[in-house]
Amino acid sequence: MIRATRDQLRQKKQLAIDRIHSVHLRNIANSDGNVFLISTAYPGVWMEHAFDALVYARLGLDENGAQVAKNQLMLFIKNRKQDGRMPYKVLDMTIAGPAWKNASPIGYSQLQECVSFGQLCCEVYGLTGDKAFLSQAYSAMAGWDEWLCANRMTLGRGLIETFCVYDTGHDNSMRFSDIPNSCADDQGKKYADVPALPLLSPDVNAVFYGNRRALADMAGLLGRLEEQKAWQRKAEDVRIAMGEQLYDKNDAFFYDVDHTGAVRKFKSIAISNVFTERALTDGQFEEIYARHMMNPEEFYTPYRFPSMALDDARRLGHAPKNCWGYYTQALTMLRCQRWMDHYGKGAEYDEMLENWAHAYAAQQGDAQFCQELDPVTGEMVDCSRWYSSAMLTYLYALKRLNID
Image (cartoon, rainbow, N blue to C red; front, side):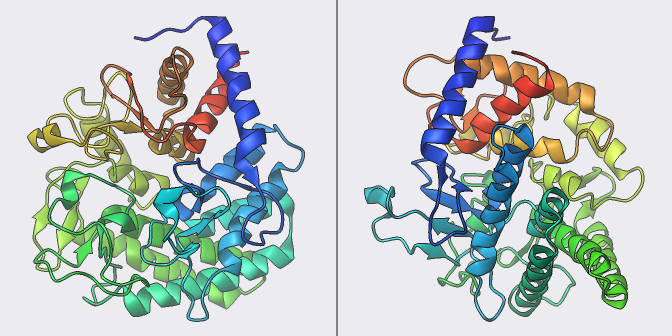
């Protein structure tokens, strides 16, 4: 295992803090104040990174952290369309490089939510107590649910559908080798004419479930008790449909299923989204975790958790970087905050964070706080330098483990 000196750990901590405060906190696209940007490689905020600002707020590095988290969510709420469509990204065109010169400043062409936005809204309300924000969030999320039901339920199976790779954020994953990266239009309403599409995916639907649970919670907080009951029923409908259509009882695993009902048996880290959103029945988690996440031939690697189980021969053709078909991702590590303690796996998470912190601190050269690392060796991959989720994972690890 990689081990850094205490001086290296401290130096990297200060590097991360200085970088965040000098580069990543910015007012963009008429936001209400500073938001938390991802990196120069991703010059803006993607919906899958909305959680970043909440982690930043909870680290206590800034007395205005809760406001930053609220601003981050309002950036998406304010830029939703009249039909309820939420954007998946908002760019800061003032720092966007040549690769982004033709990009739309606000993107709607894919879902890429990855963590329930509604749950994050509830958590920001918990930090701020802002009832006006909660009301806006409730309206936005109800509209988002309506849009998804109208445009992403073409099969009528009670689950929303994946139309492209980027819906999931899992670039270069073999689970999607036969479908296009992008949707067939710029609003995410159409899918390409390929045999597998549309798909039903566990990660996408876990987030859908999480949003309905959040809508129930928000309705309750706003005193809309009948609406709360309705959202609770709708959330349960999704959880049941996931269990019936996406869960393989023999394998104890959730898989993608195509529109014909064919199961696509890729053991992907998409399973962690199901954990994060708690879309499980009693006992399912422990069986999945014991059989797969603690299996050294699958996900139990020195630097957990790889994006694809190691015993899947198809993962050997992984991409050299930004690869959700092999590497362990900083996003995965950061999101473990949302489920490992909840399910009683805090000690395992401590171990994982310690290993990650040392791997980051020992990293030399210009490539700092990159997006991913090798799950076996801990070697950093030069991909997306100064990545927000990597820096936040590092700072969270040091705080949680009392490493100063």
